Image (cartoon, rainbow, N blue to C red; front, side, top):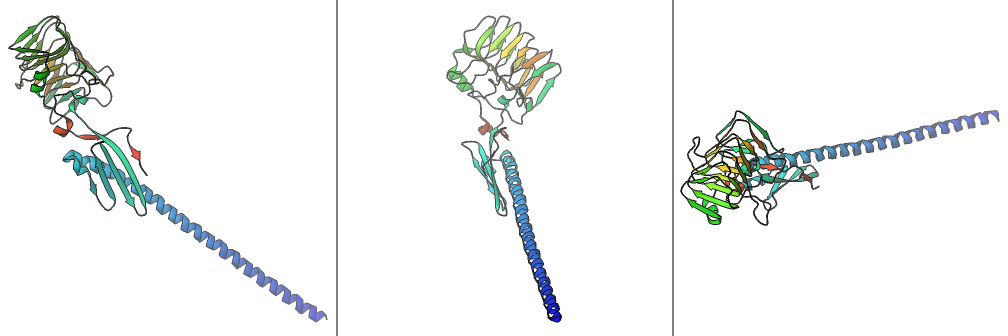
Length: 319
C-alpha cells in the first residue's frame, strides 16, 4: 500500500511539472508573439513617420524649385512633375501647389507668390546709387533694391489724362491747381511751388527754394498717381530731377535717367537708373505702404517678368 502511494505521488508530481512547463512555454510564446507584433507595428509606424517627413520635404523642395524656374523663364515653367514631386501653378490666384510622395504617404502644400516690382521699394535703381549723406527709413520688405530692368512709362497715357498741358520750358513759383501737369520741355520749380497732383516733364525738373508736391489718389481706388515723372534719356546731372534742400515730395518719383536730391523730405518710392542722395536728405515712408503700388501707365510685373517671391503668411498644408 505504501508502494502504491509513492508511485501515485511521483506520477502526480511529474504531471504537475509537465503542465507547468507547458504553461511556461505558452506564456513565453504569447509574450514573444506580442513583442513581435509590437515590433512590427513600431517598424510600420516608424516607416510611415519617415515617409511623412520625406513627402513634406519633397513638396517643399518642389515649391523652391518651382519659384526658381519661374524666375529663370516663363511662369508656366513652375509646373513640373517627377517621381516624387508634382507642382501646379494657378496664375489667377498666384498660388503654387506641390504634392510630395514617399511610399504610401503624401503631403500637399500651397503657397501664394507675388511678383516684386520697383514701386515696391523705397529706392529702386538699375545702374548706380550714391548715398553719401542721407537718412532712410522704410517698412520691412520695402528696402533699397537694385533691379536689372526698371518699368517703362506710357507718356501717351499721361498726356491723354493730363489736366494741364504745356508746350515748351516752364517756370513755376506759386501754388498750382490740383491735377496732372504735363510739360513737353524742362521745368524749373522755384520757391513757393505747391502741387497736389502729378508733375511730368519730358526734359527734366529742377527744384529751388521751398517746394512741395503731394501725389493724389486715383478716384475710387487706393492707388496713387506718381508725384514726379521725368523722362529725359540723357544720363547727366541737372538733366533729370535735381532736388534742393527744401523739397518735400509725398509720393512716387520716377525718372528714366539721373536724379539727385538734397532734401528735405521724400517718402519714396524713388525709381531711376541712377540715384544720388546727399546733404542730409531724409527718405521716409512714414510706416505707410500707400505709395508702394505700381501706378497706371507703367509696365507691370508680368510685362517685365520681375522676380517672384513667396508671400509671408500664406503657406498652407492641404493634407
